Amino acid sequence: MTVHYDAKNHTQILFTFSEGSVWGKCYKQCLFNVGVTILIYVLKEKYDINLAINDKGHSFLSILTSFLVVTRMSIIYSRFWSSREVVAKMYRSGRRLASKTAVYTVSSAL
Image (cartoon, rainbow, N blue to C red):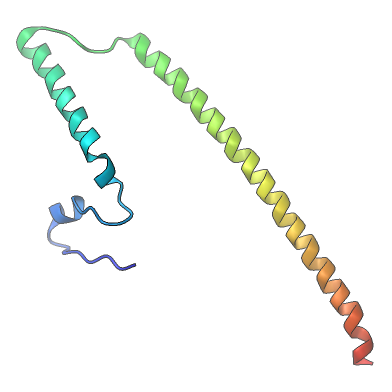
């Protein structure tokens, strides 16, 4: 797949909705987050309404994130070991095939 772009036009590169880019799928959520952030900032600065999240929310989210990361790493580790076992089985089968081929072809060389 070849991607054609103009190297001098940086905005075209940033906002290209080409194949393989997730920007086209998530730009609406990004714009919504920017709007919410601006709204919270304006409410705090102009009207003195504080909608910020306290520290307990951050600590809860950090615990949740660490749990999800550990769970994901456990899944990845188990997949790695199962793949390793399959590759080891493949090499064992290859060695058996090579040794049987050597045994069956040794009499034809004599």
